[in-house]
Length: 178
Image 1 (cartoon, rainbow, N blue to C red):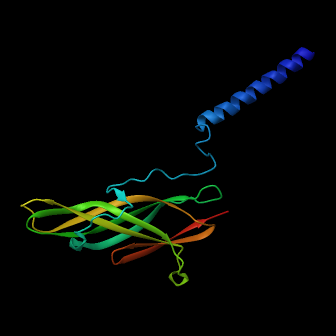
Image 2: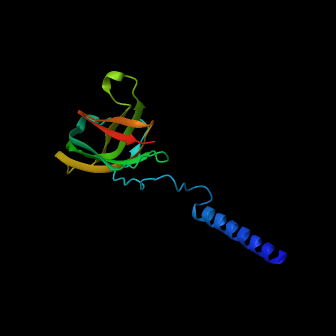
Image 3: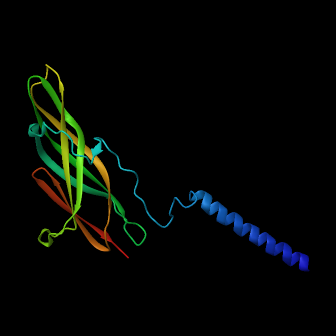
């Protein structure tokens, strides 16, 4: 009888050990949190930069429209990331000797300390104009692109985030539940 109890106890312990190791293997040994909902990786048409460089051609840029949409926002106790998209359209003035295009997008994210603006954060988005020599270009050239971006909520409740792109502003609200 002792051998049967010992065999059953050892078998249960072995099954428990296999289940724990399987859970760790599937979860990447702690790299994946099964309780947190993560949005998919963002799709990017134009690369994002966070550094200020030589932007000598920004006077050629005219922004005609700016729109921000929330794609995936399932915020709760363990999830704090949301996926948004922004679409910028406009036109770029070209001169006789150069072709202009959007080379990258500068993102500047900052906390808001001014309570009169009624938002927690301000994100400024600036398309960066790059030129290259081309004798054939003249006039104005339209542009339009859509990038996606992952935003982290900063606190429970309503997170108001103001986006600024040129003369346009849009505020979105993300709600983080407990």
